[in-house]
View 1: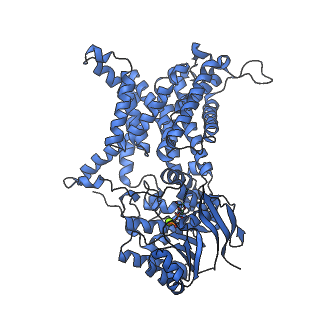
View 2 (view 1 turned 60 degrees about the horizontal axis):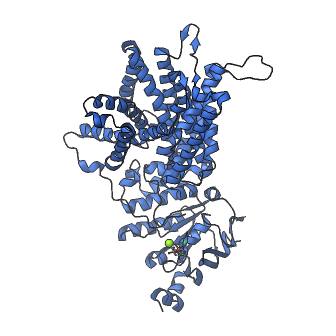
View 3 (view 1 turned 30 degrees about the vertical axis):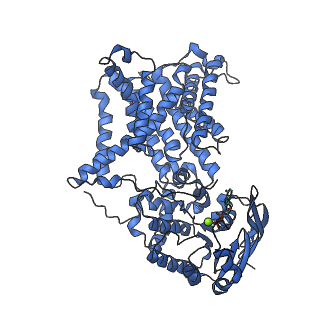
Length: 252
Length: 369
Ligand SMILES: Nc1ncnc2c1ncn2[C@@H]1O[C@H](COP(=O)(O)OP(=O)(O)O)[C@@H](O)[C@H]1O
Ligand SMILES: [Mg+2]
């Protein structure tokens, strides 16, 4: 049985068919990449999975559960976390606070014990902090714990966003263009991390990425999207040599 | 310059981050506790008023400063709290099986005033869940107008424009609602409210509020239930402001709808913005500001040409003008300025202006929803 499955997924914005009957299956533990020209509908697929948009058609199943109609705030506790193409961090909070928000789906909030900050509340907070510290160590963010996001350079923000997603302890992580805006070394780091996320943490990765070097390094399967439709599917080598794909990228 | 060596996660959770906190806040507490024994009655009254306004400010700060939901109608919750308190402690409430209307003791009436205001917060919070920014401001503004109207028309309870007398409260023979006792009551409740707010802000719900303020989509993707957290923020904010209103009722001694108008709502918003948006310190600084400004203006009037000094609407104008100046030149308000001054002295003589230069904000080309 597949880990994640999208069947006949479609969404219209007015007249625009941003995603148009897409089918794909992700196996547990693999890195699945979606590529395609700008405006192909890649980010829209992410937004459909995180339930920010309602699909016009089709179904999605994750880990044996139909998630087509699940409310968006329930997605994280099911085990799906994501990053955003244009970085959506909590700008006026510290790195630590951002990462702690990543723990939100694991906290049982009870307003009264929060207002009183009961001992059990403190214990839970420390347990969350320990999880957050694991992620900080994993991503080498030690220097930035107390920094406000507004004061961080772009490259670090990308890493913090990845960290925030990891703090939810996801089973499936969605990375929207993890290397965009990064320099060569940062991209290399990102590639190692994605590999570690997959191999060491055992998290399934679904990624949108333009950097074909990174894609070939870490992906197991690649889906090519164009105008909301599937153009090709296969291993990174296969799709790179596919004449249809080359045509879509270079234009007719 | 102080370097902190952290050896325990508790250090980041603790309210007092280092021993300096005990000294500075301890000293502050000592001063405010000792103050009534040195100050004249008038100044005790002013300080009491400061505590009340600061409490209302903390309420709005949680909503506007921490959740990013701007309310232009907080005078409504202030008013609901005040009228509830007045009705419960002065008019009394006719209850079944009771011959006389029941007068409530303040330990019951004040929590009830807060709860009523909080319920009103939920009532307005739920329908405006989808609104943000200016639309939310307009909706809350409209709500405040409705409440103002109800206060003036529901004469059987509020006595309309004739006004409502608020009885003084007594414990034994001492009057609780005047002088030093009232000072301590307001101070105690303010400290309690601030402590609860600090607790909230270091808990999941408080962080979820800040997350909503900065990015709703990603808050949601992290598992934050927007509707629930926003409604909670509205209820808490309204409840705290309502409690402040209950105290204010006794401070005034006489309620009329004119005490809870749009200008009061505006004043609270000015408090939050000028004090320093997104900080509890800001609420206190802001309260000092809105309390001191009219008095400063009154003094200034003596030195201005009559034509200017007597112009109607001078006060709201100055309020608005300062609001605009603060937003342009010091977006983090008085508290932001205070941090800079503190930093300057800590770093002396090597202060770098660039420390507080904000990085160029990254363009957000893709906005969801
Ligand atoms: N909220 C929206 N409203 C209208 N059109 C949208 C919306 N989101 C995406 N689109 C459109 O859907 C198409 C796919 O966009 P997107 O998924 O962002 O592409 P990309 O593959 O570059 O990530 C584009 O034509 C875009 O304009
Ligand atoms: Mg995109």
